[in-house]
Picture 1 (tube, rainbow, N blue to C red):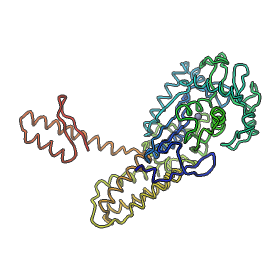
Picture 2: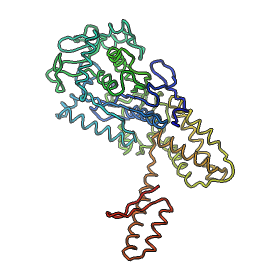
Picture 3: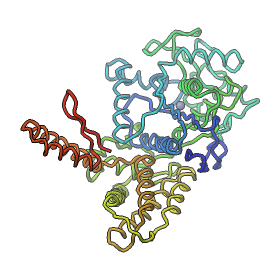
Picture 4: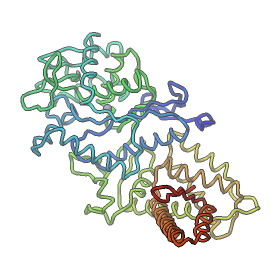
Length: 493
Ligand SMILES: [Zn+2]
C-alpha cells in the first residue's frame, strides 16, 4: 500500500493562512509548480534555500508514493529590473554589459544553476520549461484575457486591468495587499507609464530600440510581461487548477498575485489549491540579495573561498544546516551555526554507519522503534517539519550510541526497521548525500576489480580451483561475476 494512504499530510496554505489536509485533484498524483531562477547571474545561497525547500517537499511526496509532476521554470526573458514594468530586462542588461548575446547569458547561468543544484543533491524537476520556449502560448493567453475584456492595449503594450478584475474578484487575496497598497508600490517606478491605472501590470511590452530580446505579436515587436510565463507554463503542464504552487516569500506580491489574476481570468477558476512560500536566508541580519552585495555563493561554501567563512564545508553539512530550520522560518546564516551543523551532521552519519556493524540480539529492544518511526512521519506530515524530524533522528542516534557501548540491545526485526527508516529520512527525504558511503563503495569496486584481475591470471594459468574459489566466495558476499566476450563484469546486491 502506498504510504500516502496511511499518512495525513497537512500543508500550510499561504492563501488560507492555515494548515490544511492535503487532498490532490487526482488521487495518487500531485502537480507542483515552483518559480525557478531568472538566469542573469549566479544563484546565491538564499535562492538555493528556496529551491532546496521545494526539493525536500518533492522528495517527501515521492517517498509517500505519489506520482509527482514537478515543473520548475527557467526565466530567460521578460524579467525587468526591480520586478517592475519599466526598466531594462535583467538578461539583456547583462548581455550589454558583457558584450555577449542574451542567449549566452542564459546558457551560462542555466548551466551554473544546474551545476549547483547537482552539488547540493537536488532531484531534477519533471519538466523545466523556459519563457522563450513558450512565447506563442503567452501571446495566446494575452489575446484570451483581452477577449474577456480584462486587458487593454496602449502604444503596442498590453496591460492587465486590475481595477476591473477587482470588481468581482479579490486582487490581494494571497498577499493581503489592497489596491491602494498596489498603487503605492508602483507609483515611483511608473512615472512615464502608458497604464490607465498605476496598479495595472504589463502582459506584453513593446520593445524599444535597445531591447534585443523581442518577438513579433499582434500589438508590437516586444516581449511578454514577467508574470505571464508562470500562468502559461503551469496551466499548460499541470492543468487549469493544480495542487501546489511554490516560490520564495518575496514572490507573493506582485508576482503570484498577478499570476492568480491572469489565470483566473483566463480559465474562470482558481489556479492553485495550495500556495506554499519558503522564507528567507539572512546574512548579517539582512536578506541575502545580489543587488545589495550581501550574499554568499553556494560554491564558495564548498571551497571556503569567501572571507567570511572560516573553512570549506561539504554540501551535506549545508543541506543539513538548512533542513534544521522549518522552511517557513527565517534562517540566519552564521559560522557558529554552520560549525554546529557540521558536528550534528557528522554524528548522524557516524551513527548510521555504525548501524551496519550492529548485531541483533534475542532480547527485546530498549527502544520503541515503531513509535519512533511514526513520530518521524508525524513531523513531516505536519507541514514538512524538518527540525522536529531531525530532533527525532537524534533520539535514534542516542540509542545507536547505546548499542555501540553495549548498554542496550535490539531485535533483528527492529534493527531492520531502524535501518530502513533512517535510510529513508536521511537520504531520500532530507536529501543528505553520504559522501563517505560513496567513497566506501568506490573502494569496494576497486577491490572487486582487483579480484577479477587475479581470477583472470588464475584462469590463464589453468588454476580452475582458485578461479572458482574467487567467484564463489564473492557470490557468497552478494557480488556476482558475469563472464562475457568483453571481459568480466559484476553486480553488487
Ligand atoms: Zn513565477
